[in-house]
Length: 212
Image (tube, rainbow, N blue to C red):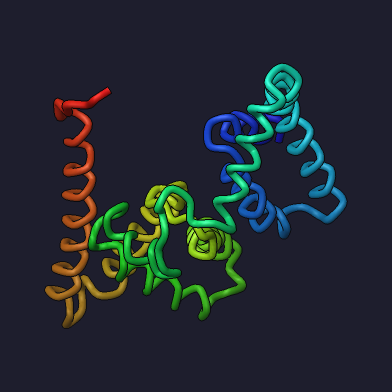
């Protein structure tokens, strides 16, 4: 639990409060394994160890650069209520942009997973994955400033959902009358995701001319 808190604290220093997505996911996975008392104790340990990592930096910048830190914090909050720097968009902006983050093959696995969740909503693993994926998308869809990478930390959940979909096809349809269609569909999902990953990573090695 100390390591969980330290990891969240380090993530907060890198990507600010989006790192807190770990807490609801951890709560969902822990609620059945531990009693309320034990879970509350562990949550306090996580919170204290997390605060011990990022609060010293926050204290330092507010003491030494109070005006700048206050302005930056206020500007960050304005992203929620204002479309800043021309980054406006509809409530569907992030859903439509999802294909550019995870590939065109992401929509079918996500739709399948969402249906499966509502049919098996008591499954703690599905609950955790559902929270990890949809909570960022719902929150940032309501935020006024729309920037494409905001829900990117839902990426691991998106890839796990895609994997579950492929294995669902394998376990249920690879041997039946629809085996060829199921194998083609699973292959297309993998090709879309892998080709998108290769395409995005190839951009890293391009020699961009930047000014400055």
